[in-house]
Length: 230
Image (cartoon, rainbow, N blue to C red; front, side, top):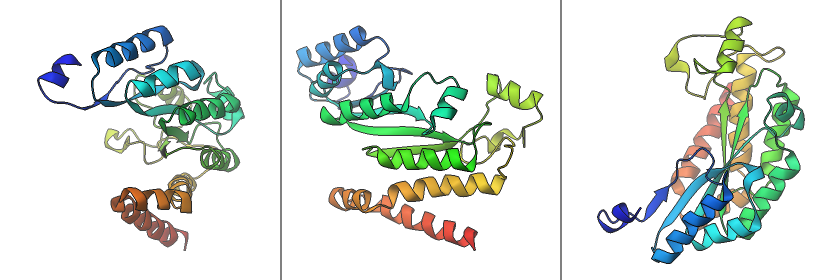
């Protein structure tokens, strides 16, 4: 950090640890080091909702943290339990509040299209995402990459729709889900983004921060969604 700050004039940093806050003592020491150096930097990182505390969040903010990425995955407790995520919806709510109270923006990540998903559980995820005080939401379609347990499971149970790796983009269905067609999953995926971002609170934020590109992309997504629903 000292090298890129002093020699390359870098002022925005992202920590790519899978879970920056997994070892809270280590995370605090990193923050203490940044504060001691007096660096004028902003940075972001990823976290699990069950590895955050008020004390750590406040120290991260003081050290320049402006955004945290939370892997929430689902807004259905049934799905969270089924995939072995090991968290509760209450823990998610608490973590978002801790970060927001500390003045840190939050990006929540969600996945739709788990083998156990239904239209109802996916709608629960969308609704839950909107109920949280998130600044940004990222929605992905479950993509079973080769070498992962979910890929082996999907292949063993004849659930793979394709092995064309160019389609493994997290934006299109790759596995068969009982009770959900490919079009259902695509429609719900688009609905997730549209219903989250095209809300007065979010649009007002874009206007205030002059993020007109987001508005243009949002309107384009709405038009495409409506065309497909005809």
